[in-house]
Amino acid sequence: MKIFDELESEVRSYARSFPRVFNRAKGEYLYDSEGNEFLDFLAGAGTLNYGHNNALFKQSLIDYIEADGIAHGLDLHTSAKQAFLETLQSKILKPRNLDYQVQFTGPTGTNAVEAALKLARNITGRHNIISFTNGFHGVSLGALSATGNSHHRGAAGINLGGVSRMPYDNYLGEGFDTTAYLDKVLSDSSSGIDKPAAVIVETVQGEGGINAASFEWLKALEQVCRRHDVLLIVDDIQAGCGRTGTFFSFEPVGIQPDIVTMSKSLSGYGLPMAVVFMKSEHDLWKPGEHNGTFRGNNHAFITATAAINHYWSDDAFSKDIARKGDVIKAHLDRFAEEYGDGNFSARGRGMFRGINCISGELAGDISLRAFKKGLMIETSGAEDQVIKLLCPLIISDEALAKGLAIIEESIKEACQQFRRIPSEKDFFQS
Ligand SMILES: *Cc1c(COP(=O)(O)O)cnc(C)c1O
Image (tube, rainbow, N blue to C red; front, side, top):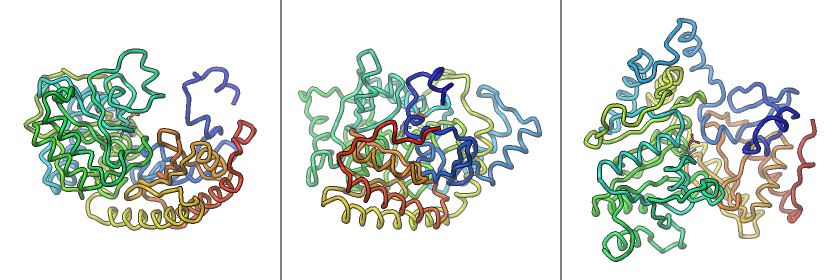
């Protein structure tokens, strides 16, 4: 670990939770340089929905590279981009009746969010954006303004303006419809909330602690947006690409966002790629207004095309995600009941699930114990109190059962020993 301590910035984070040197990965498994195997329930924070080095996409990528296919071309037309757009149109957008234009932004999620916010502000001529408690939209300044987390916000070093925060679904407890509050403040010219350009929302908040909004709430949110002539942006960067069971997380809700951001698992291979979808009438960009050197990663186009062709040509994959999601839910419900003294709760949708352990210290201890047993799993939420299950969607039933068993053992042990604070020494020594 010496070179990492010596040379790499203190800003590193996941490496602290999983202090090993990894050198190989396949499917739902990661291997360290000593040959130890780890089951990966972190999956690149939702970037590896199709697993590590998916064999189906790897060959397409190797063939493309072997043939000297374009690796970088700014935003030039390439055959790789053409194939991706054609596949996206025929397999994703058309069957879902979605009339979206596609913008390739810089390759990170946060850049797609920047582009979406800019676009909404330019379309409406308004500056304000509504975002939600516990929302996470990235850490560049515009996206960070919309992000709730104080740890991330604190690093901005500048006022984070242009956003008004509203309570997410269930923030004020069950039975309190927070969209009614939003409707009220947008109707009241003296509410002090400037009329917004857009509302930006995650259908399931990932970094915010696996908070899944109800379909009723999301539908009501869309209605409030329509009533007040405000654009609806769904940030589907983590919840999209099948994590909740469908390509877009909002499909079963029956809403049609004006703008959608997508990244993380879109390339299918862990390659950087981010897009903004906007309804055709909202594509008011002028050429090059939002640019970037790495708009459209051609290698990512190759693997993203293969991913869509292979997994999204019919509904078999969706059904499999729903089935495994139910298995995960049943286990988490049982863990909550058996170990939480009535305090724990399972949460989420599809294969985007977690268990709220109330205490960040306890959740951290569970994650540490799991790692020692060969499972990588992270926490999220304001206090890092939610154990977050993000296993690859392609995980085998055996590996899923194994991962859930490790989680159960870790919860059981940690609960017995609660109040013991994990220390650095608990980690593997190398
Ligand atoms: C990860 C994430 C982002 C930011 O993506 P980066 O690639 O890390 O910039 C934005 N929104 C959501 C919902 C995310 O999960």
